[in-house]
Length: 381
Image (cartoon, rainbow, N blue to C red):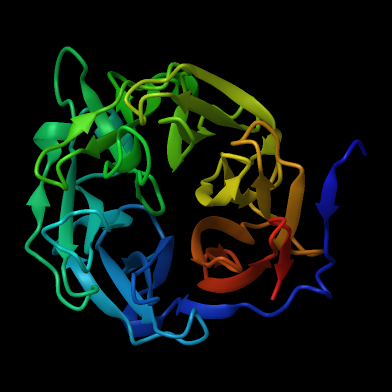
């Protein structure tokens, strides 16, 4: 197979995952949209949307959190950390700022969105989405008051007329090397103008801060129509890779965009034939370096037809190829449903990746460990 290294494990071989959020817990009807980060002390913080009345995307939705102090083997009680009253608070995008000299122990940013109407109505100009953050300087035990940054990162009204707006979903990131060292970067997307057939008014973009959250700027938009929910990772030589969902869906593939100025603009955007996708979210992280280039890990449901068969892929050449694949979870038989959907990745240490993902038709969000050896070959724990 020309050097292709593919690991496919049957469902009988897949180890049990650890439930983190389960439908009905703390009187939440559903939990969706996972995000996870690792703190300097090794703690893991898992975030998601706590949907109060139903599993739908709009309604009374809070952002909730749990903590693990033992690398994901056990989790704390649930803690609501953003409550927009009866409205929607969602798309949690956490990141740890490790490079601000004012906070030598690190400062956590949690970016999120609020909305006052259904997405389709906002696309029609009836309602708005806003962009906020809260922060913590004590490892997530307490949080600041919300800060609204919509005026800096959301272009409302003419000439751009952005309407729908969403962060990520999943973690944000900080650039740790090169000319843009310290930059906080949040992948995002927006719709521009009136709704178009096939969601072609959507474009992916990013927003970023070079002064530790004091001010924010917006990147150029990805050129491909229909680019939507996105995830990003740093590359060598001031590069950044943005990986996006293709909302139009006539090509069931992920979109890759490459920047050489830390995510400000895009040199190229293309459909990646190595990354099939059923029109869903994916997660991307940097897990190390190989011959001066970043090693990337990517997760998404590896199917062109259904949200199922959650796959972890590894690239040693900064996303040019994905020769290593590990099947994390799938439904071998039964009626078609959304068995594995949204996910987020975290580097626990040099030898472990954590995967937080939606499972069993959105009834639970679970955590699974993957071990990686010095050649960046993954194995399920």
